Amino acid sequence: MRRKIGLEELLEGAPAPQNPAPQQAAPGQAGPAGPPRRQSPHTEFEFELPLGYVDDEGTVHRHGAMRLATARDELMPQIDLRVKENPAYLSVVLLSHVITRLGDLTEVHTGIVERMYATDVAFLQDLYQRINSEGHTRAAVTCPHCDGAFEVDLAGGRLGES
Image (cartoon, rainbow, N blue to C red; front, side, top):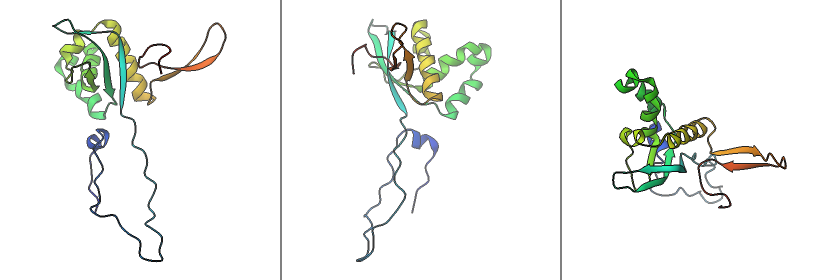
């Protein structure tokens, strides 16, 4: 018997229900042939902010993670009164929903996003757009000097690091 799960549970990486005992094939028969299991989608992306969020104690938080947005994430800001009063606030609310971690902070709320540098907010908006429309953080680029084509990861990290 299979259990139905909702989209949120699926996207949050909830483990699939396990069968209590594996089915064994009867003698002389092949094992159960089901469809091959698909690998679950990559739903969380690490990043490194260009400047970093500075908290009240002066600690700089640069490394974090952002998850893929759900339909609910995109709809909820539409009923937020702050967004109705100022449509530019939509990205603040949206980013606060999808950033799962920022340095030692495990809960990112609108107040944190409001106090980020504009450079970091622009970086996060671009990352949000890239992962939710293309599903990855890589971009194809061409060297202006040698015309060599290669790929870079826009989520952060230092040049030369793997």
